[in-house]
Structures are given as structure tokens and as C-alpha cells.
Image (cartoon, rainbow, N blue to C red; front, side):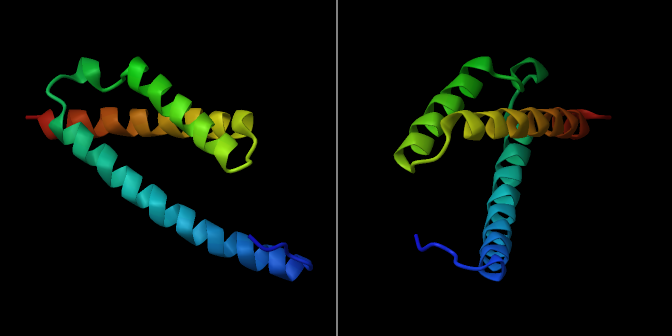
Length: 97
């Protein structure tokens, strides 16, 4: 990873990263949609064990990448809550008469 030397370089790199992050979030959103379609009962949409499993893996990867694990965990927890809320909506939508 190279360092940026100007604000223009920083902004260009952040814009590039944002495009990639949005692409990955869109892919993750599709997997959430799949889960909302596949899970047989509404009660298992929220899975505390899975949440903690994801957090453990994210913290480990954050540390391996030299990132702030606390910051990344907080971002992931917020993201997962939003995806869980979205999955509840999708689960309900797949089962409405």
C-alpha cells in the first residue's frame, strides 16, 4: 500500500475505495436477501452466535491488516444491525399472503 502525498491523491483513493466498498456491500446485501428467503422461521433471523462469530473473525482480520480492531468492530456491529433489520423485512415480505 502506497502513501498519498496530496489531498487530491487521498480523495481519489478514498473515492476508489468507496466504489469497491459499495460493490462489496451490494454483494453482502444479496447474501442477506438469500438468507431472508431461506431461513425457515423468523425467530432465527437474528442469530447472536453468528454475530459474535463474525465479530471474532473481523477483529482477527483487522489485526492482521494492521487496522484498529475496535473501530472495525463498531462499524461491523452497526452494519450487521442494519442488515438484520433489512433481513427481517425481507423475511416478512417473502411470507406475506
